Amino acid sequence: MVVGHFCESKKHLMSSSIYCVIGEICVKAEMVQPGVYRCKVSPQPPGLVNLYLTMDGHTPVSQVLSFDYRCSPNIQLDGQIFPSEDDRNKLKWEDYQVQKRLAHLLFATSNNTSILSSRIPLKSLNEAKRFALLTSSLIEKEWMNFLKLDSTNKFSSASTRENLLELVLRNKLQEWLLVKVAEGCETPGHDSQGQGVIHLCAILNYAWAVRLYSLSGLSLDFRDIHGWTALHWAAYCGREKMVATLLSAGANPSLVTDPTSETRGGCIAADLASKQGYEGLAAYLAEKGLTAHFQAMSLSGNITKHGMPTTNTLADSENVYPHKFSEQELCLKESLAAYRNAADAADHIQSAIRERALKLQTKAVQLAAFRGHRVRKQYRKIVWSVGVLEKALLRWRLKRKGLRGIQVETTKAMKRDMTPESTGEEEFYRISRVQAEERMQRSVVRVQAMFRSYRAQQEYRRMKMAHEQAKVTFFFSLNHT
Image 1 (tube, rainbow, N blue to C red):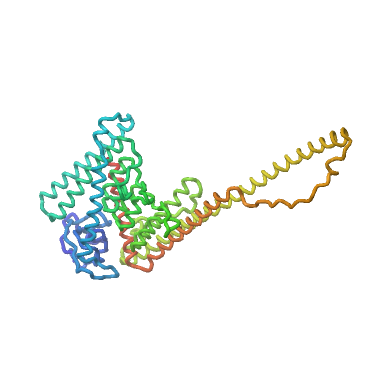
Image 2: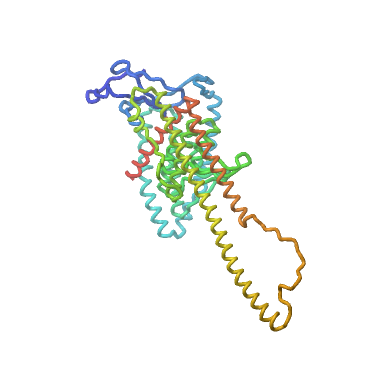
């Protein structure tokens, strides 16, 4: 229950549809009476969250309040089990271990003295100056905000220490990236366990690292030793905010990990999220992966853009679906739209793959026919030359029998090898095509599985809102920079 008063300039909003945002969850607020709203929020893990009212799902129209979201340990609501105190401590310990690895990688692998003593190419020096100019103001702004928050004493000491650690790591990451840009390094290194800086940031849900990486020019799709990108790790750990930020910055959701004994064809980000139980996140990544694959084939000219599936935004959904629909009905309609979009993209991709395979097969048949024609044409010249030699030398000059009078022993006919020369290469492409079709089918099934779980539909809608908000924030920050 939310109780408040509208200002004189905001009283016209009383008749509008109001939404309540608690943490990362946005739900419809029902007006009981003017100034009193009621909403039901699905359970979420304990922690410090923000509460505010909004019109579009991300812009506050009320005061933003912060409070601790608490619940009883090991309680199960709507199929979701909240972790106990021991489980939360275990998760904190695992995050602490990853933070140590990230700090060691940032502080131990950067060598500023070697950069100062070596000669830097002019192009790399200009890129480093540009990166420093774009990021120095961002770091200074974050320090000013942190000092203001610390002076108000609104947060606990544990939260303040965590924010301080993140700010120190962010500052060091800016320096580390500056060194990499000055060195002209396009592939940053790994730690002892095979992960890079961007992978560790994805595991820790440090979404602020994505913007620094984008400004530095380093690839967000950089792989670790197992072929996992930052998006794979974020999906595996269920980091919705990190996934939304990576997608808004241009990370590719259709990339495949290295094959293993369990998964011969590798895994995409949607497969990893589904294995960990994040069905809504897996459905959203599966839809985005199919759409990205379709767009990549369109840009390369392997598929026509006729009938290209379109992705509806949250604003379009709100305009199409009137506000009289409940939250459950909106989630169901968005799930239907997602399934239709994924099925259309998969159908276009499979049609393009089969059409391309048919064209290659037709081209191979035509090439074989042309080569046979050349061989037969050359064979006629050889037969004519042998006939002239036979008549001129053997039959006329030497007065002997010609070649036709020679008795030749019958020999076994040589077996013709009907297998093509490039059997291995064609087999590789055939297996790759089969694996790609299997991944597309799995992606469509991931989206279709949302209909069996209302929680997955809520997670999909929440992920969609987070992605749209991340896109607005990312492009606004780039334009402002």
